[in-house]
Image 1 (cartoon, rainbow, N blue to C red):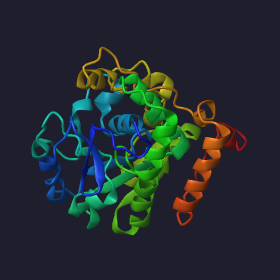
Image 2: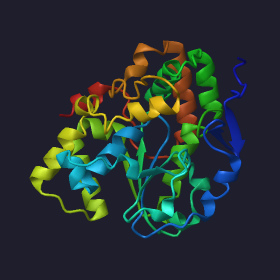
Image 3: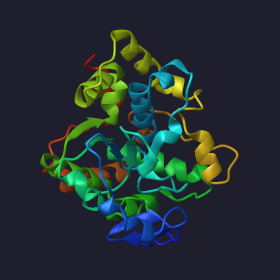
Length: 292
């Protein structure tokens, strides 16, 4: 594959790339006019930036039955940009939890009018790219890291450039009811993140319930929790017996994959693309360990 070539499994819709075997342009046309409820909670991420993790956290916070193991509310979460099972959003009771990888420009108009709430999770881009690299291998779509990095820079990947995605949501934050958190913050202080989300949503949980959410949303717990790790549903989607959707859940795994030259080129692109975005990015697990 040429470095700048767009893979055949992607198609372009209004400047954004989507998986051609999962969604259609006709469906995507309907998203702009999607009717947002005041109680809706949109959970937005760039691919491989903690989507399954934050989704599980939301379920544990919102549903007591999810916390005590008596219910499985996983099918209550709707992926607005990949509604593969054609769920009827209008029939779900409030509050609805809606996930999306959409760039800011393609979200429902209601969100931009401060209807609903948005929780946006971002991740250091090197780890997001390496996670995507391994995910493609898991799905039987192996790709040379150098080629993937070139497409990652130019936005010829799912949901386009991570730099534009993060910047788009951050720069429009004043148009939204939004909480922005980082993947690395979730690793460093998961309980603190749970409390922050509860405060943002106005959700009252006891100290014991917060502890339980933090325990059940830990990466170690999720690896064995079929309700929370999505491996079965993703395996079914890709017609594979098992897809290891949760891999390491750490910070700095890019160091095990990228060469020094690749890392330096990545740094230059990052500095240029993100120079006006004052978000904190954590690149190494030592950065949070040194401050504990």
